[in-house]
Amino acid sequence: KKKKKKKKKKKKKRNNLGQRLTGHSIQPLSYELSAAQNMGCTPLCRVIVTAPELTFLRRLVKDQYRVHFTLDDLPVLMRKEGFAYAVRGYPLGFVARGSGAGGEG
Image (cartoon, rainbow, N blue to C red; front, top):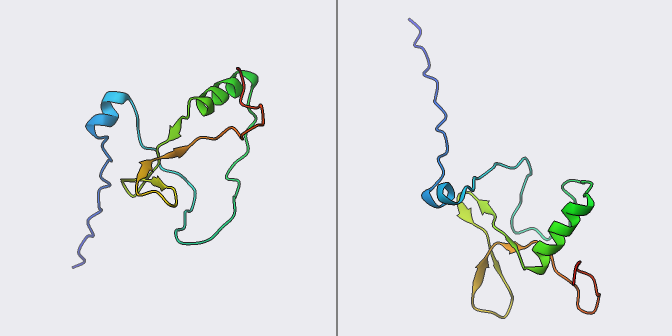
């Protein structure tokens, strides 16, 4: 007699309480990430941004919005050399000093 193999049920990932209260959800990415490799910037996608979206993005950069990234259910932290602390996430962008860029004044 052949034994039937039991199919493993995929457990549905549940959001934690903080995610439920704030309406955030974790979405899987289709990108491959590597650690401990010195690599330059690599474009992941290209999008066309409308004028209202650009205004919104400039406001986020001006307000120092940070992207919170989770890897293997752990928050990604950013540490600056010479400082003894790390902060959660990374900045969406920055305004170069003296550039006069950055959107509405």
